[in-house]
Structure formats: structure tokens, C-alpha cells
Image (tube, rainbow, N blue to C red; front, side, top):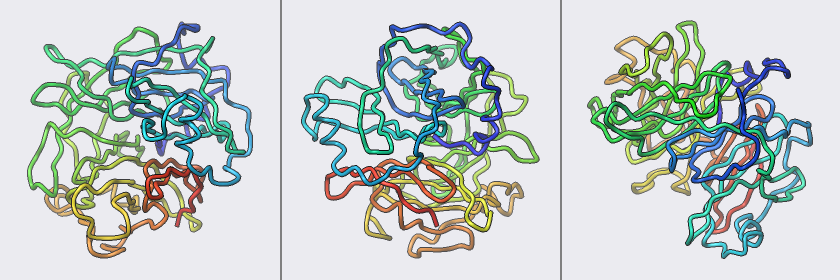
Length: 368
């Protein structure tokens, strides 16, 4: 889904192996929660049912028209027709744009059997299931702890020489950050850290709330995971030189408002070159601003460098929940109202799956 460091990842040589001793064919998807891409069409899948991350070499690297030519109206019905299902039995769990080709990938779940699959959408709007026959792949397990198990995997992202994932386990320090070295080795196990975060709206440190969505972030200080949580603090966790099993204390820099559940994060640069963090979220309490419970905000990336006590945690910047802007550097993105899923398409546009009175439309939205 989404990392600032992803552009650096594409400098990886085309001959570099991303998967060590890959499996050939026989891949069966057990569950799906999140999709994202690494270089060379490498698809990363968070698979909570097996507490693992899947890496799939899609071979989808031929540059095509990177922009959807026109909206795909009622894409839920299109997907359902291809599966012999009813539209209301189809749930799109996540959306990811493959930067190597511009093709859109959707994680889909079907009721009542809860079968999962991945479908692709090309520039012409053609929908097709991702063919898994013969692909090279690897599955890496995510450890819970000495006497625990992983209960959910919320997000996954590629960052230069490693893959990050986030989730929860059934311990007091339940929030987890996982790292997997590249090349990804089938059957291996990730390193794991437990994460503690100051929830600005709750005014207390918490260890159970999971990072719902995140990006890897590089700064002069080092490498961080920047994640958003329910209610909705945006926090960073330094992940350099940390031993597996350690506890990582986050730094909260921004609070977008109580009663929100973050869904997607990505960064982009506007026409002036200014860098922004997009946080796409869903309000699960009474909506106090805008026409939809599905909305998004952009945050000046300068907030991410905050480290002084007078600008973080208890004193983190708080969004004005009754206004479109405020404080300076935090503002609503109108194009994300009604969005169910979002991913970056370019520095000027996002790919959006929008709910229009119960009908899902896949379309391109302009970024401010």
C-alpha cells in the first residue's frame, strides 16, 4: 500500500532476486486483509488466516497506460458476475496500484463461503482474476511471541531491503511490527517488535491498539514506521538497530479526531514540490464534518519530523474537527469523501473505490 521509500526500492536491479528459493505453482489463498507492491511487480499480501505474508512474482512489469481511462461503474456487480455471486455477497478488502504497470489489484472476499481471490483491472476497465498457476511465490510466517499467536495482520509494505507488516497478537503488548529481510525466503519467520503508542484522544499510553495502516519513512534520524490508529493518532516508530522481541515506544505527532478508523496511508508531492501524508479514514461515530463517514485528510510531512515534547504525544497537533482546515498544515481532501479504498496513482492522482449509495465505482481522483 504506500511507502515514501518505495521510489528508492525501484532502483533495485532487474536481475536482483526478490524471492529466495521460490515455490512454483500450487499457491492457494487462505485469507486477505491488505495488498501492496514492491519493485518489479512483486505483490505483497497480508494473510491473517495463516498469520503470514505472501510474496507473489506477478510478472506484471510491462508499462501500460497507467491511468484508468474512465470510471468502472458498479464494479461490485462486475466482479460478482464473474464469480457467479450476488453483488451484496462481494466485499473488496483492499486496493493496490502496481507502479510497474499501472494495473489495479483488488482483494475480494465472497460470502457465504468466505472464499478469497485477487482481481485485476486494466486501463480499459477490464476485470480479470489474477492467475496464480505457475507463479513464483513465498510465504513468510509472523511470530506472535513465546506463548502467543498472531490474531490479525493489518498492513504490509516494501521498503528497500526489507518488508514491514503490522498486526496484533493475544498478549498485553498486543500491537506488533514485523520485519522480513529481502530476498524473501519461503518458510522463514519474520522479526517482531511490540509497539506502545500514546493515544492523544484517550490521553494515555496503549499497547493493544493495532497500527491499522502505515508507511515506511526515511528521515535524517533513520528509518521509521509511520502508522495510524483508531481514534486517530498518527505515530512514528524507529526501527533501526532494534533486536527482535524488543518493545518500541512510538511518538504521536498528529491527532485527526476521536471516533475514526484509518484505512489507507500514502505520501505525495503537490505541484509546488511540497510533501504530504494522506490519511484515508472512516468515521464510526456521528459525522461532524462533510457529506460522508468515509473521508481523508492530508498532513504536512514536516509534522513527521516532530520530536520535541511540546509538539508530540500529549501536545501533538490536533485537527480542528469542525473545519476543513486547521491547524496550519492539516486539511480535508474533498476528493476522498465516500472512498472505501484508496491508493496512490501518481503525484497528482489517486485511485479510488467510491461508494455511491451502495454501488461501488472505481475511478481516478485528483489530489489537491
